[in-house]
Length: 117
Picture 1 (cartoon, rainbow, N blue to C red):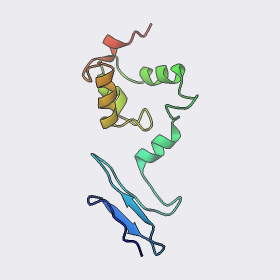
Picture 2: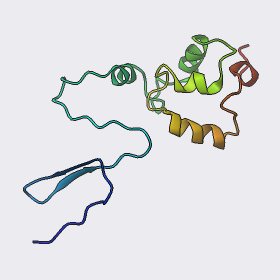
Picture 3: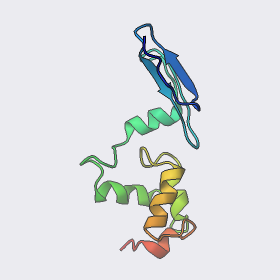
Picture 4: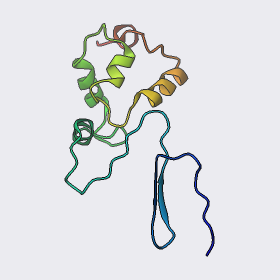
């Protein structure tokens, strides 16, 4: 039988009898959960599942403006985008990269960046 090589650093390794395996390796912040279907309670997951994906047609300018209307104009861009699970799948790590590439200071106030007409 061929000996399989696995990642040296991992948080979870499950080897199956057929020589296949499930390997999970997390970087930065992550949680790994194994649960029976419909037997998993997680507030953040539930909130994320209720909101439209930013890649879907339901996440449009009207939806985004609705999110903006929920926060004070004096809030920081980072606070708006990274708290309260406003945008499904957008975490602090990816947000930092997005803001850096967009040349937006995370501490910038929403009112300085976005005109609310």
